[in-house]
Length: 102
Image 1 (cartoon, rainbow, N blue to C red):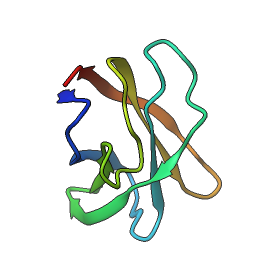
Image 2: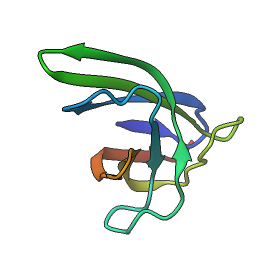
Image 3: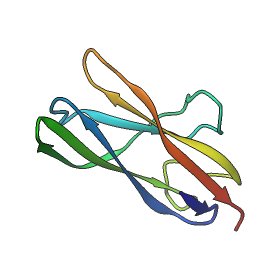
């Protein structure tokens, strides 16, 4: 995904699991590419839908300078998610965000 540094918008994603994670927190981190995530932000869960023994949760996080959870400077970031389930807390790289100068 590409985003300008002066843009504030919701970024959406999905995570699919083999069990119902309704009510479980999905957190997002955007470390610089190749770095370990350290700054986690709870995402808003939009929906969790069961289908054929799997559950797909759609989540979103507001990023940007006008009230976003994360404000980006120009660069490349790893979109990283963590599902805060019990006892597991899987962490996965879910994509790349490229922030470009305004």
